[in-house]
Length: 474
Ligand code: FAD
Ligand code: NAD
Image (cartoon, rainbow, N blue to C red; front, side, top):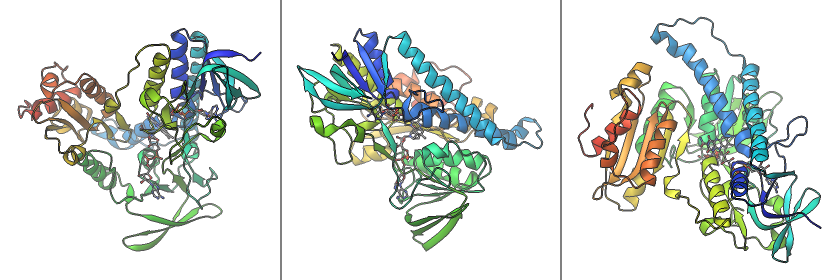
C-alpha cells in the first residue's frame, strides 16, 4: 500500500520548506520532496531552493564581502584608519559564501527532523486522483496525500540565441561562482540581480556595463528613489548602465564574449570577459505532469491561483515563485504559512499590500506599499514627508549620509500608503514601515512613536513628522 499523508509539499525552497514545517507543527502528517536541483558534490539532497543555494543568501554574502573590501579601500581613510595594499582573495570570498550556504541548507534538514517533516528526495509529479487522495510520484515511489502544495519555484530565464555555459556567459548560478575579478563584466538586465551582482564585481574592480531593454531605470521603484539611485550608481560608483538597449547578437569567443546591441546612438559592439544574463525568471512547472490532472497555468506558465493560493483543483495549492506575484522569498514563506493554516482549518493571513522589496546595493533601496506614481495614476490624494540621511546624526557618525526616507500618507485620512528608503541599512529600516502598513497606522501614529537616539530610524520618525510639515531636525 502507498504511503499516505495529510499534506505533500512539492519543492523544498523557502515557500515549500516553510509550508511543510508549519503544516507539521499543526499536527498534519506532512511530506516534502525536493528534486535536488542543487545537489552538493556528495550527491546529498539540498533543501532551501534558489534562495539558500543560488539566490538570496549567497548573493548577500558576496555583497557584504565586497562592501567591506570597498570600505577598506575607500572609506576607512575618513575615519583615520590607514590601509595599504588592500587586496581581495576571490576564492576565499567564494569559499566563505559556500560555507554559509552549506550551514543553512543543513539547518533546514535539522528543522525537518525537529518538526517531524518527512523528507523524500526526488522529483514530484502528479499521477492522478484515487478515493479523494492525490497520487504523487516522488522519485520512483507513488505516495498519496489529501492535500498537495506546489512550491516548485523558478529558474533563470535565458534568452534565445544566448547559450549560458556558466563559464563565459552566466546566469545567477554562475554569477555567484566567479573565481577571479573579471576586468570587463557585462550584465544583460538592470533588474535586482543585475544591480546586486554588478555592484559586487564593480566594488572588486571590474568595469561593469549593464544593458537594459527598458527606457526607464528601476521603473517599479518610487521615481525619487530611482532618480537618486541612478545618480549614485552611475556618477558616483561608475556603473555604466545603458537603457533602451536591444541585444542583437552575443558571440562567445575563447576567453571573452562580444555583445552587439542597438540603442538610440545606433549599433554598438562591446567585448566582455564575462557576461551575466539576468532578465527575470521562469516558473518550474515542467516536471509536475500538470496535464495528467488538468492543473491550470497562465500564459507565462505560472500556476493559476485564487484566494488562499488555491488552484483550480480541489485540495491542490500553489505558493512562491511558481505563482503570479513578486518573486520574493519572504512572500513565498508567508504563503506557505497561510496555506498550511488554511488546510488545518484556520483562517490564514497574508497582506499582499504590505510585502517589502529590498535591493541590496549600496546604498540599499527598500520600499513597501504604493509609489507616488501609482497613487497619481489611481487618483488617490496623498501628502509626503522626505528626510535626507544628511540630517541624521547616526548616519553622519557612520560617514554614510547618502539617500533619504520618504513617507507617503493619504491626504485626507493620514493613513500611511507607502514608505520608500534609499540609504544605509534600508533593508532593516523598512521593517517598521511594514508594521505600520500592516496595522493601517497613520503618519501621526508613526510621528508619535518614540525612536531611540541616535539611530538611523530617527530619519523614519522625522519623515513621518514631515508629512505634517513639522520635522524637528530638518
Ligand atoms: P525556489 O526557491 O526556487 O525552490 C523551489 C524548489 O523546488 C527548488 O529547490 C527546486 O529544485 C524544487 N523543485 C522544482 N520542481 C520540483 C519537482 N517537480 N519536484 C520536487 N522539487 C522540485 N528573494 C528575496 O526575498 N530576497 C533576496 O535577497 C533575494 N535574492 C535573490 C538573489 C538571486 C540571485 C536570485 C536568483 C533570487 C533571489 N531572490 C530573493 C528570490 C528568491 O530566491 C525566490 O523568490 C525564492 O527562492 C522562491 O522560493 P520558492 O520556494 O518559491 O522557490
Ligand atoms: P528582474 O525582473 O528584477 O529584472 C530583469 C531586467 O531585465 C528587467 O529590468 C528587464 O527589463 C530586463 N530585461 C528583460 N529582457 C531583456 C533583454 N532582452 N535585454 C535587456 N534587458 C532585458 O529580474 P532578475 O534581476 O533576473 O531577478 C529575478 C527575480 O529574482 C526578481 O524579480 C526578484 O523577484 C528576485 N530577486 C530578488 C532580490 C531581492 O529581493 N533583493 C534579489 C535578486 C533577485
